Length: 289
Image 1: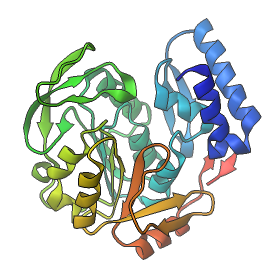
Image 2: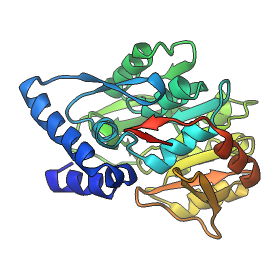
Image 3: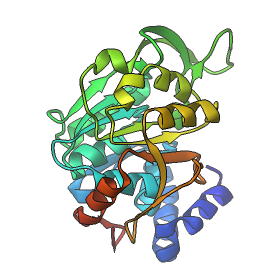
């Protein structure tokens, strides 16, 4: 992020708005400290977890500044999940959601990250938190069918699939691909997170049966919005929004992305609302969620 963009992100974030001086101060300290002592640092995080942060990690440094980079979606995962629940983290990157789900909420996680540099950072975060028994790592991409495809790599949170004959001036790599229906023919996930930079429709094409057994999903919608929305609706999922401080779950009449391009879906809003309301409270940047 550029400096102005980062400052705007912090001051518009719900936690940044409540603690603007603290959040801006953490940003300034990181900018100065990471230049004096470049390299990774360990961030004490939610529920006794820790996260490795390094310059250039946009999502990870967002967690440093405001506690939860994607507050609606991350708080939803924290409040929905319980020990032993199954979560699938599709497009795990460095593992922020996996660490929250397994480390703070106690869920069982399968994390998918095909890009070698990101996968290594994901593995480091899992080991740092002692989560090897709860988090299964998959160095594969997720798509409509098993096979291979080419991806951009070393683009931090914006690594993406090159579709068809598409080329890129960035570094690329050929990665293995698996369909979720092939990997999980009988599983019943409580929560799936999908962040695949425009490849959402293909992921859902390979997960039609699994989606019908899934309780809740958060998905980025970068492309093919109508196809993505239709896939969730066909699986019996309903669009919702979540307000983390009040723990209020609101059903939407039509699906809509939030300001981060993400949508939340649940199968049973009454069941989900009860789970969210009864979840433990978590300290985030001095605030209780």
